[in-house]
Length: 151
Image 1 (cartoon, one colour):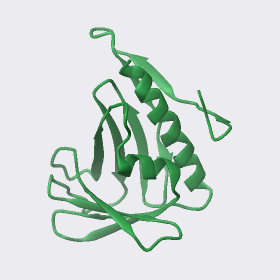
Image 2: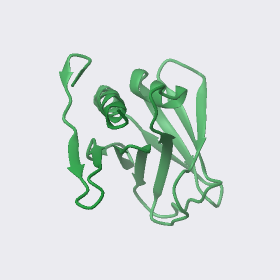
Image 3: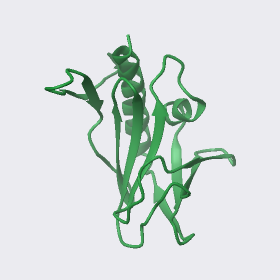
């Protein structure tokens, strides 16, 4: 698979019991967090692990995504379980048509994401200029690979 003229380096793992394949980008280090994008036949999970304390999230916690060169932001809710470990998930159904938010993550440079925890405190995670194309390329690779899992 190729995206943006670069090789896709995804991790592939097959569950020994279900024989289903799971793809992963592996962790990418950002300013204040790490992120990995995983996919199986059912869903695509953009999983953030935020650094530092006071990072409790539940299903009412939100994330505002800011894109470079735009004043518009996209918001999403935590798709994961309640936790105080700093874990936040963007969960998408794996389908042949890519959702708008997932497509934007793969095609537009993210400048920062502001996560709002259970105590309504904002936690900003920034993407440095050299991290933006890496994230976009891996997101594109994973989206393309995920579509292959549902065929």
